[in-house]
Image (cartoon, rainbow over all chains, first blue to last red; front, side, top):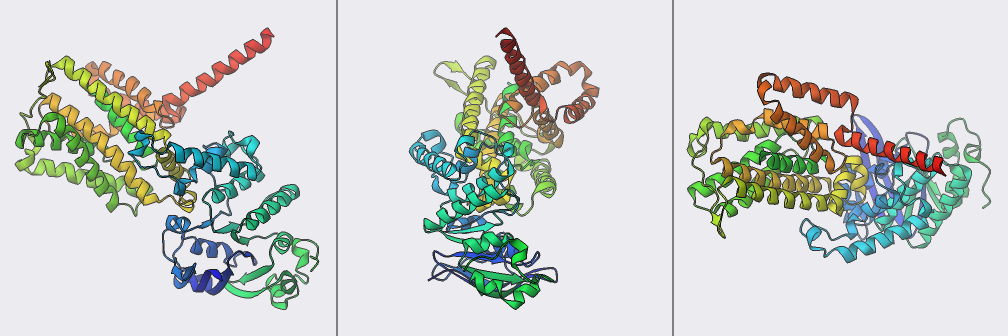
Length: 263
Length: 290
């Protein structure tokens, strides 16, 4: 069953089509890789799905035909569709733990009056407990009281994912989660993404590291100039002529990201 | 007395600053509270102690109304537009003699009554009454800042896109911030008007707003104690410089520029830095002793 359906979506900036009449169907429980050369429209696609941009045309359906295109980003997050950012997005002046508890906004029942009534105390205890679990899960437990701005890059990326997980997503959109990581950090992150997937969360992942995408995903969509170029298993993608041409001049796609993946 | 009012204004304004809406209508909301409370008590005979919170409520609504019109703007556009709409309100007080009394304002506003044998219209009881109100408001704002709501305001100001992606509705939080801030500013207005017994539009002009901004910037906005310091130090200087009244604005302008240049965290930032240095010094001493 499809959990997310992108139907004929376009997004123009001025006269330029960042994504152009794109169709994409994501099944529930899937882990889908989205790749493509720079400027192919991958991040724009995420921005359109997550409500940062309103699509110029087309529709996006989430779960049994609920239309979500044009809704506010916060509303889409509330429905269980949560994204991470390509840039390192976190609250620099909050501690690691507070970064994650702040993201439990949807699971808090606080208003101006309850602040003084103490009625939310129990819910907040649960939220802090849950946030601690997530921080531990992402391997940041020993840093929980550190200010986010003081963390090394790899940990900051992990914190970005932790913030998204704190929203308890049903669909998680990961925008280049491995950028700038050392090989060890990459391996850990891939392992964590797999664990998240095993919890039944549907994952869409945009990533330039070809080897990791092919390792993680059973099915990959390739974008080029805002259009869907081809979809298929990693093996199919690697041997597809049009994909090879899209990555200009590269005769063998595997030379971009590492060795050939056994299929 | 005026010190307490400044403190309420500065502290409630800081809550709005934590979400990064440096609006320029705060002082006018203080005026809305003053006019509402004064007119309710004078024209409709509402008891003073009921009129003050009602003034707060109307000021809060006025703040929400202004901000909701301007939700599409942010940053500089928002700041300037808030000044425009605030002047609209203030000029309507000047323009309409009835019911606002025009540029001379309203006089004969009732003083607070005698409650439980204490005459609140007298100077000393009113002083303690406003001190109490200030402390309660400070406590409430302190709790609010430490709550999830306070965190969400800071989250929005640090990274609005990230905040929205975790389900925090930015328009909603911005309106909430200005509603809370406006309410307390309105209460401050009520406190003022029932002491003065009169109100006029000059009290709420842009100069007053600028002084409020100076208190806050000089004090620092990073922590709850910034405005406390700012108002305490600057308002004392303000009172002490009374003999130099003609060059006073120049003096405070220069003070603000110096603070912006040499201590961007404000007085509060200086204190924090000094505390760190002191701790380090002590650490060195104990290490040497060992």
